[in-house]
Each structure stands twice: as C-alpha cells, then as structure tokens.
Length: 128
Image 1 (cartoon, rainbow, N blue to C red):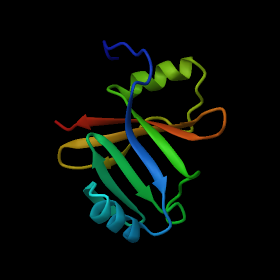
Image 2 (cartoon, helix red, strand yellow):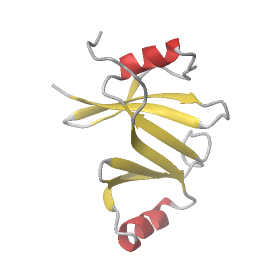
Image 3 (cartoon, helix red, strand yellow):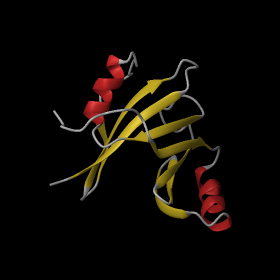
Image 4 (spheres, rainbow, N blue to C red):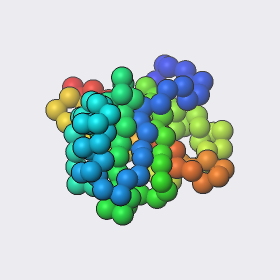
C-alpha cells in the first residue's frame, strides 16, 4: 500500500468527446484549431492540451457508453479506487491496464455519477 494520502480528485487527465467521423475531426482539431496531435487508433484519436489529453472517439466504433467522459488523473489508482469505494463510489471495474508503451502503462477504472455520466480514474505508471 502507498504511503501517499488521498484527499480527492484534483486534476483532469483526459476528456473524451464523441465525434461522427474521427478522420474529419482529426483534420479539424489538428489543422484548423492547431492542437498538438499525439496518436490515432481506429475509431479514436488523441491530442495534448498542455498536459490534458483530448480523446476524440466514434462511440459507434468502440464499446463506449455515453457521449463524453472526464478522466481524473491520480498518482496511485489503487489508493484512489479504495478510498472512493469507501466513500460509496460504485466502480464498474477494478483498476486495469488499457494501454502499454515502452515507457508507461496507462491504468483506468470507470464509475458513474448520480446522473449516470461516465467518469474515470487514470494513472500513468512508469515501466521499470
């Protein structure tokens, strides 16, 4: 267990926005708005906005619910999951790896607010 304390969610790490055509949206956000493009997968693309990631996704192409999601960045996802669960948050899953590259693992856990909006914890964990 971590020696860190968990006092609550404080930082947005990623915001997901539903789009109808990812390629068209990439061209607009990258070329027209001038956002820093990171990478693209089938049905989704990512931009960096000074440390906050913008995720554009075609909800029809992936198994996603809802139109948008706010991902809250936490240092210790296990601790945040534990403490929020103790406060009554009902998670739809346990923290798990959703992406891995040569330097980091990206961990997430999803839950909903009282109005059924999808929210998530995210944590980038260095490898090695």
